Image (tube, rainbow, N blue to C red; front, side):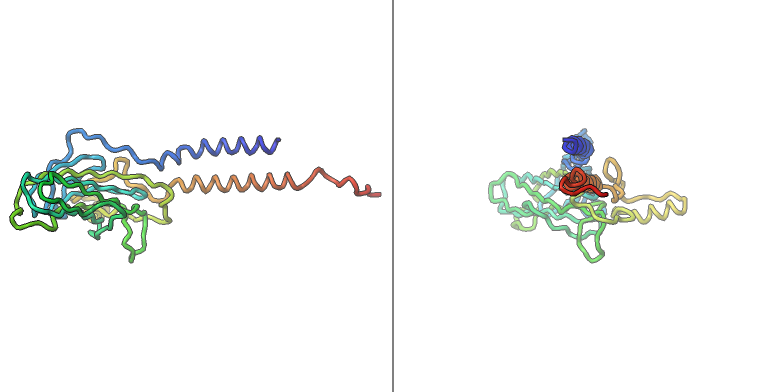
Length: 266
């Protein structure tokens, strides 16, 4: 009974300690639209319009244009990019596509989702979705893993009739992320997130001078250090449970003392 009470108290304490860790693995709340969401898109990587996660950005353009946005993504996040293109009343068959690139401008494949869709004649809108792989805090140089930093979204029509070129369209784009937590944690982290101008900024900090930074977007709570995750909590829980199991096993197998059939020593 005593061992049962000890184990019960220990499990209750571990449950309370693991509560915050479990909460950290839930999807982070989206930022509310405050009327300051961007209403235009860039035309290249260098002019990509910066958006925050959770914002509903809009832009007007023409079929045949390349529309660019950029957003920050941190380690252990799984970004989801959703775009909606509202087409003109009269148009032919069109195929639209979204591509996502990381801070090194490497195209990142979608884990799932419809990143390319075809809109037939008379279709009023087309929706696109790209769910990226989980962003890693560190990766091998030869790997193509998504890393913390700035990500670029490119939206364009890849197939359409020449008569549809230049027709006006309106677009909506939104980026949200799910916090995967310690399940995606790795040992190691980047020295700096992959954002435009980070080398210029680092040099300016060393020289004590002021210099322009090409990108100013970052997560609301700053970039993570990459070493902490709820994996540490569950590792500690496993160690404590193993110690309690060892103590319980010893208490159950050691017996009550000298066996009753053994004669006393002279």
